[in-house]
Image 1 (spheres, helix red, strand yellow):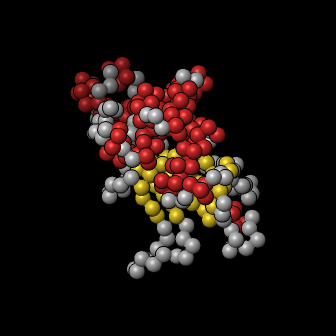
Image 2 (tube, rainbow, N blue to C red):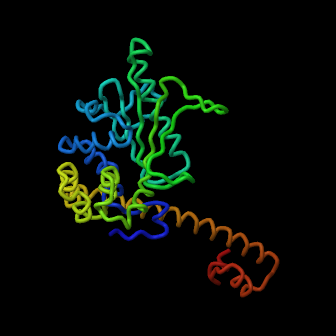
Image 3 (cartoon, helix red, strand yellow):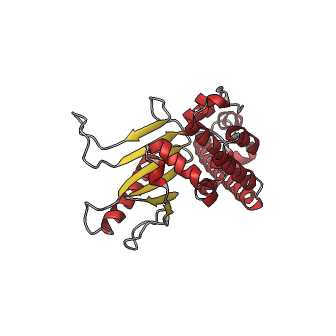
Length: 288
């Protein structure tokens, strides 16, 4: 079993797949060997029959740039199948604006679809699936389905676009004490994305052919020097970022202390008293 701390109930930390950049997520989802896993995941989330997901085409994940001021946006995965486009996003952590970002991607894809269609009737339907590595909504459940509704009477718009949010943190928390045999296929699929070790992935996969392929891919990626290098680089980048923030904070605090010390000196306050009040050294105060 994977140990989950209190903090991890809010956000799953350091899972094998999610933390080694989004390329790991794509490496699993976009691997032709794992196409049945991708189909199954979409099926269990949206209810689209597997027979309708047979001929999946992976589209370019770069959005069209309308002009030089248009910011370049990248989506994790865009799939074309039948009369649908399916956008799959991975949200590794919560931050203010994450849902607006998802909306921007969704609307951008929809706009491109309609721009490339001769009319609005035959335009492809756009569906978005977002995997959230955090719990945000008050009501805890595995899948949230969002659609446009009338505020007072809950009427849905005709041909209403759907967006699905998968609460990975909740799934991990709820499945922690469950025997593997009691897990649903969908829960197992999600737990593979959260596997902290290849050994755990193998336990979840069991004898299932589709999940064993994913487990084998995870095992290969976790030992891949290039992927490990990316992980190390990401960890190092995060350390540098935290260091810069702490350094800036300390500089701000020290600057404020120097201002206080200067004011106290101007009032002829004893230097030992200023040292006690500000925490600055005698040499630092004398330099003022």
